[in-house]
Image 1 (cartoon, helix red, strand yellow):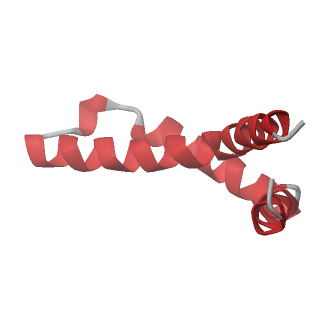
Image 2 (tube, rainbow, N blue to C red):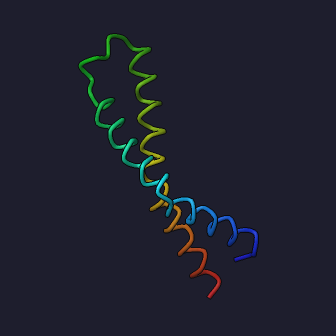
Image 3 (cartoon, one colour):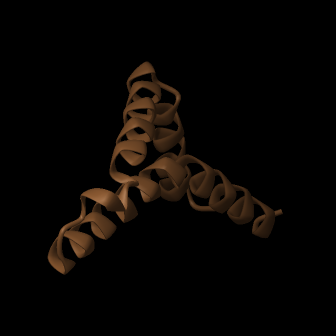
Amino acid sequence: MDKELQKYYEERFAMMGSTGWKDLTIDIESMIDSLNNIGSITDEKTLHFRRGEMSILIWLKNLRGVSEQAYEELNEKNV
């Protein structure tokens, strides 16, 4: 893995190890719980908007795991 890509992942993991990131993940979980209710959706436009919101929140929720997996795969290729 080149130095620039390694630095990218190291900085990402440092960010994800911070208290602020942990607080954000708690907020994300709360937001997912509150938005994951179809009872409040009144029309198709709202449904599509909600799907977009959920997509972004789930991406953020899974970002750490996906980043760790990608980092490990890149390291395995360089061994």
